[in-house]
Amino acid sequence: MTDDDNPSLLGQIRDKLIRSKEKWAEEGRLLTGMPDAEHRNRLPPGQREVKNWPVLDLGAQPDVKPENWRLQITGAVENPVALTLPQFLALPQTEIVSDIHCVTAWSRFANHWRGVSSRALLDLVKPKPEARHVQFLSYDGYTTNVRLEVFVDDGVLLAHSWDGARLTREHGGPVRVVIPKWYFWKSAKWVTRIAFSAEDRPGFWETRGYHNEGDPWKEERYS
Image (cartoon, rainbow, N blue to C red; front, side):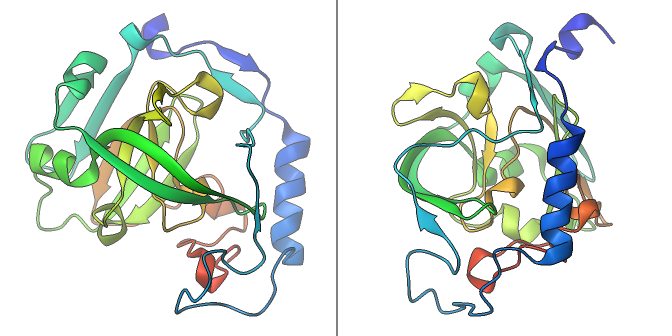
């Protein structure tokens, strides 16, 4: 691999932070025991609204230059691709407005996103019949997973812009995943690869005590 494939990390992975989040899972912190499966409220159980956008990561942020960014879509697909940023921006563009629900109990309403919808990507790569699961890999080594039916849901996209401006590095730029109906750890920042497979591949937090699905209204915070 070249240096372009491995951008520098600004900061250091914080083991203490990771351990504290694992402890949250062990203790079931923030669980109310009152799920809202019918979505009667805009705020899922245990959440509070914020007006700012908190920055959460593992302690290190990859410095991905736009000219070096690549998106590989691989695995159980008929047409694997490796897109540059200009190629990605040339795909059909979608704008959505959606809420953010973070597993650390904050929510931010009415975020304006622009990017490429998951359905446009599916049209491009054509998943094979056996594809049932999707895994995201980020430039900082982070991974997370969703079922294919979650990925194809309304409002899911790979975003390059937020509220009319390009995504900043701390919020996952150049491009991040946005899966608005799930807890936000499923919306991988700094995404560089999407892999389709027949088997599920639990990601970073899913193997550290967090739920494999992540529906906020069902309080699927932890496994």
